[in-house]
Image (cartoon, rainbow, N blue to C red; front, side, top):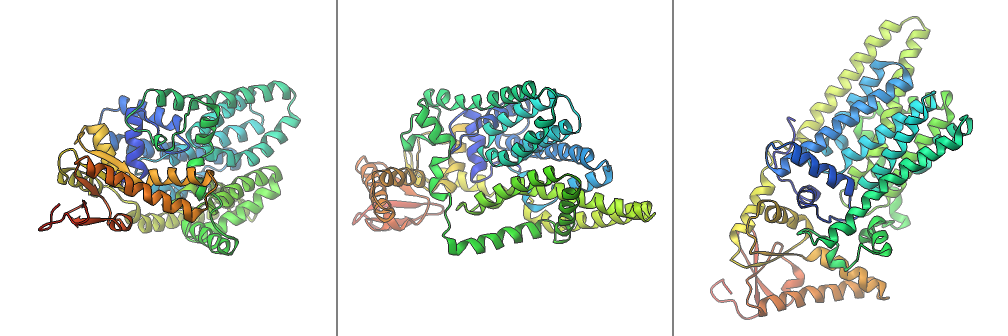
Length: 487
């Protein structure tokens, strides 16, 4: 709560908050479960603006994830102290904490993962098939929140297969699991239903994809919008990405925690080969896919990997406690572990606090209100997605400057490039024609007599037009029409 963003935040946060408010279509893969839960949350909690409520939802999901994780670790280790320490260290790791203070899908993703693993672990230790059915339902709902859930399938498959082989009523258990999994993805019916309602936020519209068709729905669910980012790195750049991921994990627990996690993975392997392999597969699948993903903010997408490392961290702490017990120093070991884990936690808290603290962040709202306050009536404003989402939020949530037309040229250029590549053009040709389309759109709006603005000093626009720098925007003028610094 102390570090929570007080309101409007940039990038995905503004888009998701506005998308949930109007039940719109956000970027792939659509996140219908997140949008529906967030919409319900904002209706049930009438405190502050919509953006603040959306940020608070992430914080609540983060706390839920840590509680579910701690409970699972108690089941695994039967040592509440080790479980609490592992949960606390995960909570103050920068990657996790940073997603708990703004509207994003990742803390809900980790909450689902922790709940699913907890139910499966409990079921393997003799729990009833009801837990298995619950795990299946949560797994299906998790798919409706984030399709990265499929990266957990190899590891979960190993766990479930090993348990079902020994189950007396394996057919009934498998059926309950399958029914639960099948129910969750029905949430994706939200996409064609809402697209048919023409919501004010529809990020699929520039791509011309009909989500009511099986092909269109599959296009959305598989993330084809961002296909250019998948497996984006050539072989020569893979070592650098591996090193970056190792550095992220090492810094996440200040090295010491990662060494304890390595001890925990070894101890878990000795006790339960199947569980260690399953968790290793989950971590590896996440690392391989997102390690080769070209998004600039992909560090946040490694949270499932951090959850697995935290499981092993808890196992490592438990192993150290057991070692103390074996040499007759159980109480000494508990005190040393408590002091060491507390010291590591305090160090992480102090190091990460300033990096994640958003409680004074008003820059996004100031920027968005400044832009919309600066442009002329009936303006046509062009900009890249990262700058556009806060403006969209103010328009659709707060009805501020509805006369302004917002044009996300980055999204439209992405759509044009995908279409042109599908028609057989190479990347360079597609990029050039997409740039020509941006120029054509600008020409059209100027001919209509609209005042046109760009949020960036766009080099493509400068090829044909003159750009006049304002306070927060650039006025776009036809070549040769600028007089005394104005169009």
